[in-house]
Amino acid sequence: MTIKKISEKRIFLIFFLIILSLFSIRTVITKEGVGSDGVFHFVITRSIFFDNDINVSNEYEFYNDFTTYFTGNPKIPSFFLDNPGTKTGHRNIVAPLGVDLLWLPFFALAHSIILFINWIGFNIPANGYSLPYEYAAGFGSILIGIFGLYCLYKFSRKYFDKEICLFSITSIFFASSLFFYTALQPSVSHVVSMAFVSFFIYWWFSKDKNKVSTWIILGIISGIMVMVRWQNILFLSVVGIEFIKEIFDRIKNKNFIAGYHVLLGHLLFFLFFTIFFSPQMFFWKIQQGSFLTIPQGPGFLTWFHPHLFEMLFLDNNGLFYFTPLILFSVIGLYFLYKKDKNLTLYFIIFLILQIYINSIVSDWNGGEGFGARRFINCTIIFVLGFAALVEYLSHKIKIKWIYISVLLLILWNLNLISQYLFGMIGLGKPTPLRDLIINTFKLIYKIISLDFIK
Image 1: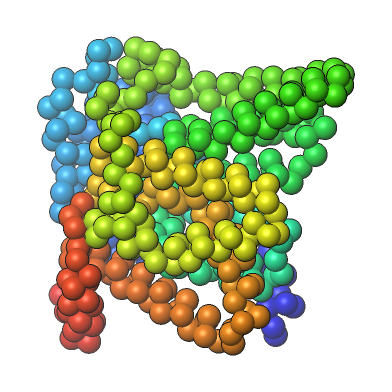
Image 2: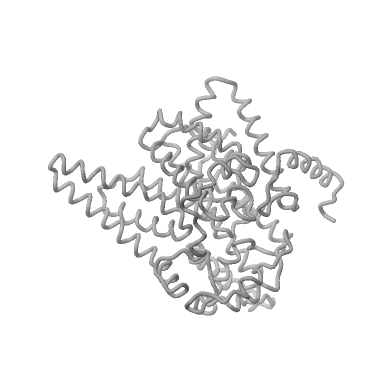
């Protein structure tokens, strides 16, 4: 059976089951379902569900006694316990609220299943801390992420055939940090961020804006998208640009009725965006004493000191250094421009804005995370750019050479992930190419000698 004969939904269902299986294996081995920054999301979900508040002092103290599987560090470092807290007397929470709220239905489902299982004779702690709750959070993120990839696929089908779309999505997924943050560390917000950016771009560039429902849905998606990761607000630049263009066009043509409809649509968008982003604003008000704030502090963003070159090319989680396939995706935007100039210009604007905002963050290298993780929200840009390049190259060279090249890049990415998990690289430190190559041979030795299971 060729891939043409397999339905799209079945393909993504299989994809979901594969990713969920990998996450399940990871959870069984490590006996944890959330880790890294995901813990800071999880404690809020647990506090809202069990304590009916956002005071996470008890959750911080609980997780301070547990260490992460891969680094051995406390899940909540003592710094967060020793810190005097915010001016409103709360433990400082820097994580955005979006993922925490999206997890609540999955958290509730896990709690119901645990209560039922205990009712028939088992004894699983129904306290919000046991492993099923953590697994439910990861399950929720993976499920949302798969829907995001499916939406991305539907959007890319406007421009490319089925095989190229699926190949491009698979390539970007497995050859970038998206795989790590979906299958192995889904509790961090990146995969959900990717999904909602894909939802927004699909809806903005595909739906009829003469319909009231389109503006309402766009407002809802945008509010959640920005609440998941604040940097996603830069994707809304298209809303402002298009509004200015359309208003001036209507005024120029003296078409005031059409101008009124444009204004009404954008007002609806802003209204529903505000409604669905408001939980974050009230959360900040309670936590920080202000409806709008930067919880990491004023020094978190160095507006006039970007680290552009370092963030893109250097060996400290540089985007193109750690994920070379992304460089080919960016090159592919040239060929995408020939298909849709307007879309590509906005993609370039989005990418430039994301590069700038990521380069002015104090930990521009992504801290102790794997790869250039903050660019995962640009996945839809990279997928379409790479698809355009693949389509062009398929007419110039044999397709098998493209497959082989991508396979090598995927294997290289899996190699880097393995090095990261074994503590050979990462944790915010530069890693020269020479060390990556040496570590590759060390890793092969570990696998051959079964040293990794000792």
